Length: 89
View (cartoon, rainbow, N blue to C red):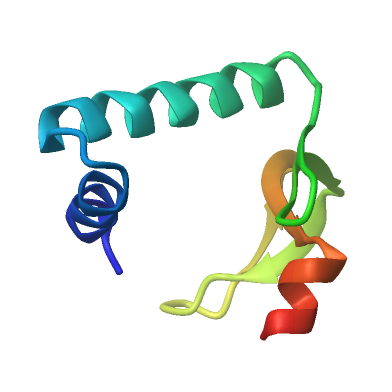
């Protein structure tokens, strides 16, 4: 399912227009992004939690040359499924 499919599903299920569903989805994505950037987490009970995870710097290899490179430490977004979602899968 891509973003357009999700917008269509939201519009059909709620009886709102596709434009309104798109605005709602964009607002949700923006809110999650801002919260994660600020170092917080977003928990949706019964669904899961969006959070930031820190990856340490590590050694890697350039696949073209085989030369060893250093991969910098960075923050990555994670999603941890809640119990109810995990049980349904």
